Image (cartoon, rainbow, N blue to C red; front, side, top):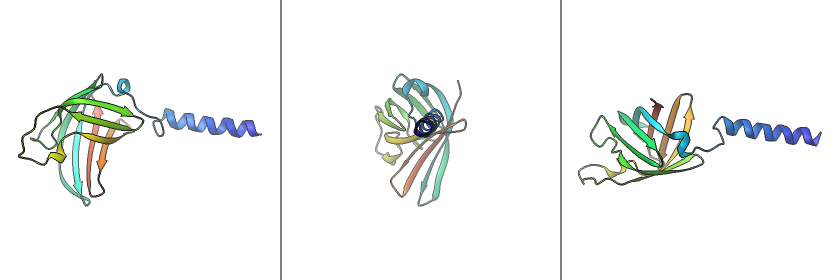
Length: 135
């Protein structure tokens, strides 16, 4: 009876991991071109939405937005640890916009159907990328 319970628990954990609920992501699994939207909310109110694209390959990224510096994506490197992706942006930026819009730092990464969701929150401001793989 104990063996059945243990097997059931192991099977459930494996199933959750395979579905991406508990499992992590890796650079190879993320590889490709993604297109979608970026939205920033502050205190639950939208500050706007923009069409974006990002290419992930071999620990490097590059991308852009339809709107200048909303968000500022540019290029750099990234690393993944389970369900967190850390961006290090290597581009030069001018001081004439909100630098919190630069794609940098830690984001939670998850899948929702076909979409890849990257989100970052400080408790008041939430940045969310909703991306779909295009290649």
